[in-house]
Picture (tube, rainbow, N blue to C red):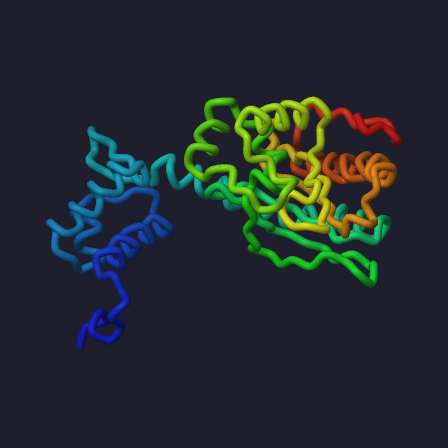
Length: 268
């Protein structure tokens, strides 16, 4: 009985492709003949796998020697994985400090397939507080997490987002008009933070600020959420500098260049 017979959900061809990829952890480069002998697979099968991986950017072939090595696609994926894992753990101390000082629940999120996705969370200490979980996805256009990142995208990408995912109304406060939404994003870029004024859910307000990577590009958001009755305008003004300071600290730990911390008490 073959492995595919034992597990009907196993994709045999994909499994063989992964076996080929695993070989590059043992040796920097391989020829077709070497891989065929090492894996005990049919030469035509290995060639098709190598050709597919090469055409997809996962492998690169030296035309002079005929040897294959890992392509730039793998380096890109590896960099992304390391960056997000680094973000998850380096964000934790500033998040803990912010949750303790404000009593509110705080998050870090990234943008993925049109949604804001929570990758780290620290619960607040207030008896009544907002609850979430790592992996929770929310429509980006209605959340502080998502709006911060959309605000730093080129206009063409924002238009593509709106065309692909839409600006669905979730509450009476959700911004659904494209022109008004673009104006909202412009304002977020200028002031350096975003507000979710009960746009995601009635009774919930959030503040978000950008986290920048080693290139200085915003790629994640730190956000604080609380019941609307604890987020009066004067408290929002007081919280914004604290959230920006936490975003600065995380960005600095990630090696972001050219950061200038706002002076305490400044919401600009």
